[in-house]
Image (tube, rainbow, N blue to C red; front, side, top):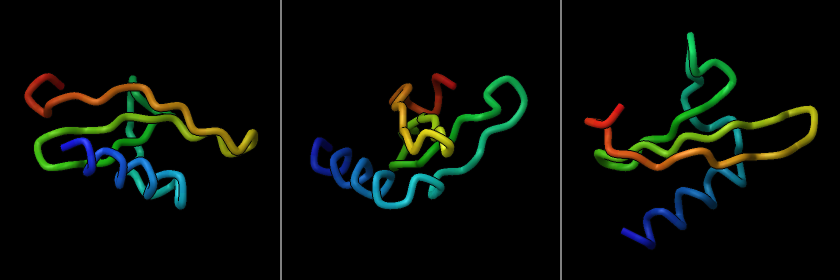
Length: 61
């Protein structure tokens, strides 16, 4: 699974808007699916900055 996480991070770094935009309380963050896990991150477009927030199982959402 470690290699999959690395590949996913590379994809986000290449295209920060690849993740699904979240709504409501999590507005301003994005999620990218990796099997039954979710990677949550925030992309600050004005600052060209990515902040990785969480990696969690979809059942813990």
